[in-house]
Amino acid sequence: LAAGPAPGSAAAVAALFAEGALTSRQCALLDELSESVGLGLGGGGTGLATASSAPAAAQKAMGEDNEYEAFYRHWRCLKARRRQTEGERRRSQWGWIDQVQEICASTCGELDALLEHLARLDERRQEVVRKTTTLHEQCEQMVQDQERLSKSAESLAERLDYYDRVADVARLLDQGNAATSHPEFASVLDQLDGSIAFLEGHHDFCQAQAYLHQFEHLRSRACISVRSALQRSLEKSTAQVEQQLRERPAGDGSVDTQVFYTRFRAAGLNYRPLMSLLHKRTDVHETYGSTLDELEAFYVHLRLRLVATPVTSHLQGVLRKDLQLRELAPATRQASSYILDVSHFEQQCFEAYFELRQPQESLRTLLERVADIFYQALRPLVIGCDAIESLREMADCLQMDILEPHQQGGSSRGTMVPVLGVVYRLHRDVQERLIFCVQNYIREEIKGY
Image (cartoon, rainbow, N blue to C red; front, side, top):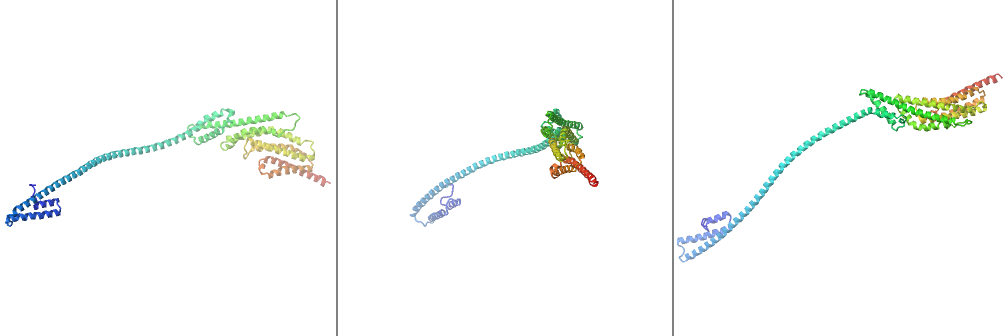
């Protein structure tokens, strides 16, 4: 207190007011108190106060000073406590701020470390991405190269397969008779034709000519195997039919027509696929066509050798020498029906082995030769007949029973043309003989009457 301004003085009040420790009301009361104290003290100096009132005033002033002194002590204690409280509060706030700052600094440090780690991780990721992209590009290129190499290898394998087929085909053909009945015989022919076509189109390949000759030789062997197998089968069937004919009873002159066809049709079921293979390949190479023509010609030769004599015998039995003129027309009808049935059976038997094609010279020859047997059997009777009525009946029989029905039947007419041609030739011979006899009759019986 001694170091500061006097209690109750205007300077002290102004200092307190300046520090904001007192309110304006408290400052006003302190100003009034200062004025009153100043007036009391000034009156004593001028001699206006009485001697009796001086001690009382002094005591009063001292009491008021004590009160002011107590007030200021209390106020200063409050002020000190307030400053201490505010200091503690501020220190606490600053301590919290320092803690938060330390936490933020630590967090910032950790965040910076994390950012550094993330930056390094991003660099590594970019490196991985770059390497992965490069690896993908290299893999794509390798895949493309692999596909290209695979295609090249497949192309080479396909081309080399044409060369490797020689051993497989030769191995199958070495089986002999069993080769034609092998289920893969058709594929063997396909391989032969494909290989030959490939080598003919790539004659500049290494050893192409040598392998081409080998394949052509194998194709000839395959055709020979087919031809040998069918010829043996036909000869076997012919021998069986001839044996059956020889075992026939001596007095039995009639022969069942189906005897000539049953065994051949049964055997034809096994060889029709082989003939179909040859027929499909006639445009591929002439070897197939020539082999098929040879087999058809051989078949026709065997059939004619087998049926010529029995058919001739049967017709001679129908057209016997002691035939009456009135029986000539019925015999002609019977012989015509028989030869048409035989021709029809021969055609069916031929189709059991071979497929129909245009032109088919072998089938035409077979039917013409069979029909010619009929022609050679009837023509002597026609030439030796002078009966006009019998000749007319024969002409009507041939025209109405054979030619006209087959002219109206469109489907069967095309295959029976060779037979119908022979019948038509016989019909013309009958007509010519009839005209000749009529002319003689007119000249001798009418004009010469």
